[in-house]
Length: 170
Image (cartoon, rainbow, N blue to C red; front, side, top):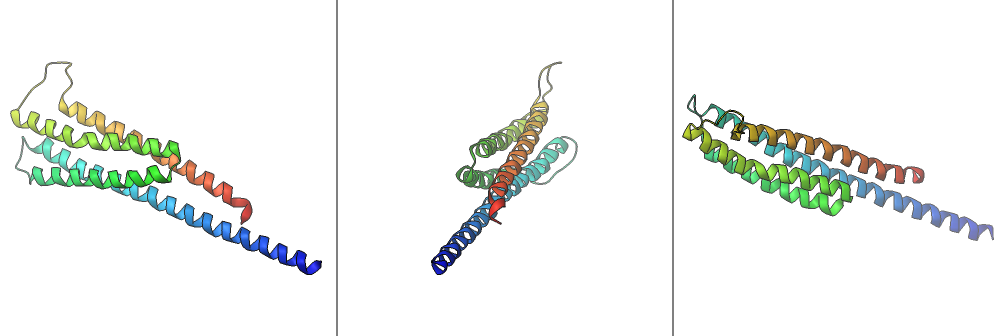
């Protein structure tokens, strides 16, 4: 009877260890997915900042190839979109929704840059109180930063939830 009880106890311990290892792999995978998404979003913002700076300076000084910079931003947005799909698969729902919000902001950058560029090239001036493409660009940047901050907070919370679930089995 003692031998049977010891074998059952050993089997339960092995099952608990297996569950713990699987859970740690899930946590690591989710962390990597979130980190990749943030890295890809950062690449868009970095390229976007560079492009925005080039456009702003374009009326006052010669600058590099704006079209190449715009192509970089488009490619970075597509890469972030691929990472966002992985976040949607990993979840949870709140984190996936915030990744979608980040993507909405990121995907608005290329058209905003094109509008800003045309506006700067035309030498357009807006009427007092009228929103300019420059205003739109800065507002878009602000919304993007807020969306990324919200995503980070939700991702941390989701990771914390996973770690709390794993805690007692350690």
